[in-house]
Amino acid sequence: MSVRWFAAIVLACVAPIMMLASDEQGPHWGYGRDDGPPHWASLDPDWATCATGRAQSPVDLARAEEVDIDAPARNYGPTSLEIAHHEHVVDVLDNGHTIQVDYDAGSTLTVSGRVYELQQYHFHAPSEHTVDGRAYPMEMHLVHRSTQGELVVMGVFIEEGAHNPAFEPVWSNFPTAAGEQRHLEHVEIDIDDLLPTQSRHFRYEGSLTTPPCSEGVRWFVLAEPVRLSDEQIRTFTDIFSHNNRPTQPTNGRTILLGDPLDADGSEPDGS
Ligand SMILES: [Zn+2]
Image 1: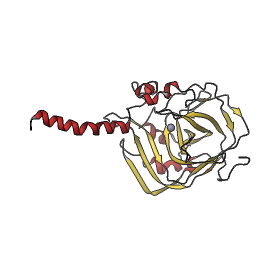
Image 2: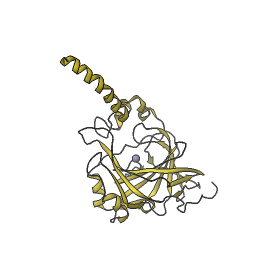
Image 3: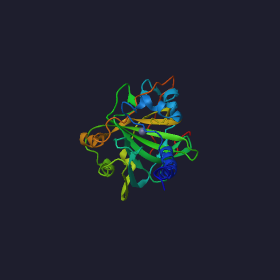
């Protein structure tokens, strides 16, 4: 076989695999100068909403309207912990986006009678949402999905304080390399232990804060932060120091400030 034929056969076999791989992973994106938030919309036509969307997240939580509205009811159970250093593209650069913890089925958030199942939670540093222009050192996002595919994300601010032992099962098991996934059958963790016990919440209609920036996401951001020690915060920021999208214009959206979450899992009154 001639070298040319051999090359043609190899190309014919390998090219579709390469295309398949890039289709599955999508284009490379990140938080850097060349791949960061201002560029997301131009990296993929499917991500145009990142630039053209009128209801994007995060936002500055300011001038919130205090209202007497139904609080969501949370009913979180413990799960065996599956933790993944979420990696987007195979690349020699450090282009991981966050530490993500996948959650077992069965933990739910109920909003006005509709049930959303907790899928995973992950972290940003510094916070993506701000309150009256002020950012927190970190923000945790709990991503919930209904059986119809609708998304509800709960944001939890993290500020510096005393050492927080509730986070240690996650914090002591951070993957050491991008792309690494650890399944920890023996570790039980209850998400309730990571949340403030009583907290009012901001709510508004927004989007995913990462490509494809899809809208129609209901946001609940707890007003009361949880605390981690300076050392615990640094454990995360040593890996991801700027994985936050800047705040987006509200474009007239109303931000509501509602009652504390109902933590006993029962339906709130009047829903
Ligand atoms: Zn997030």
